[in-house]
Amino acid sequence: MEEPPNTPQAIWGRELKHYRNRAGLTQAELAARLYCSDSLISSIETGQVPAMPDFAEAADRELSTDGVLVRTLDFRKNEPAYPTWFTALGGVVSTRTDDIATVTASWESISRAALPEDMSRGLILKTAEELWEHHS
Image (tube, one colour):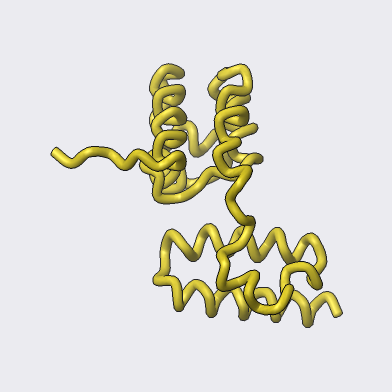
């Protein structure tokens, strides 16, 4: 039997699963309460996708964890908000508006889980450029 990964992200995901099980909820039931897909819950629980702070806050509320999920999400504090290849583009992030940066970060998380890095990089850059043009 394969050992589960011991990355902070995977350990946090197992904590989410523990509290979900303690609440007697399936992944689909928690997903419905958090307005997301059950595949997202699964991906976070297995450490394939990182949880975002707003997700942790909502999960804390729904699972009555007294804030433990938000408090333990602090393993992400020292992680860069964007991959190094993105920030290496000459400060693109700092010249964009907050909403564009937020959308770009969301795209990065989603596409990283679903696409090879070269494809996700292209999607992120295209999305950021389109948003920038729209807001200009």
